[in-house]
Length: 377
Image (cartoon, rainbow, N blue to C red; front, side):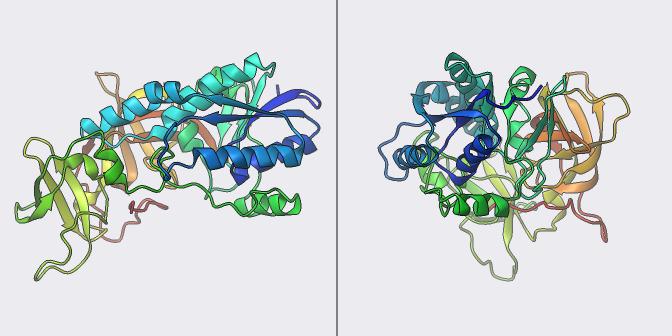
């Protein structure tokens, strides 16, 4: 069941171009459209864009002639998203707050608020598609480079049944063009990148306010000390920039973070993107949430990072309830605390948190790396 023409749809209007065009598409499809802008982070720091985003949302709503509702979910966001983000970093993990935000805020309390406003449907500017079934199925976007199912995999099936993704069949270029043609005031606004509550601040500077520094040695796998780090929490596996060790006499090539040894407080770095310790084909996944549990014998693929193309894999249940995952080719720096998301063809089935990684599978000579994998800045 999909929204009928003339039916009320609430669009989560962020103040960006994607949600603005989502509202435009809904209007052109004949729906009654109202907008809901969420303030999820209260911060007077100039790096926070919340005030400008609200102003942009108001300008879009005025241009489209739709009602804009404004609600503050900052307390819920801190409790259900930000607290887990900080706890994860304190535990030496690399959590992803966007997944929790979609689950608990956008398709949690925001969906509940849309219901109170009289709407069955909540639309967002995500690049994804949904087959409402029943049962509902989450499908990848037509624009593979913009697909956001990785971030949506953990929402409840009941919430997916009420979700509308108007941009799922469009490319980003088409979305920008629609915004220009419609004269939307945000048509040239740059896409937001990074974590919303950090804004334009350096990540370490922000995190240091919640996770204190704990200096230790930067070492090679062989134990050579190259420098000092400021705290393991400030680094992530596969990271290329930010170690601060620079060039080393007799050692040419970029350095990457390969491991974090909590017991000795050592940050392990290696040279070269293709170093065997940066690649792995075996890892365990815990805390699984399924939109559609994989049918027996299904051909599965997995993403361990957003923008990484799904990599064919096999899975086996472990005694602790986790899944043991083996990928057909090694993937770059699968990271505990990040998510592994599973696919069958163009359907996103669900996923869980990477709990442990078997390192050193290496990148076999002549073997292709996981397509689309890239190291973070």
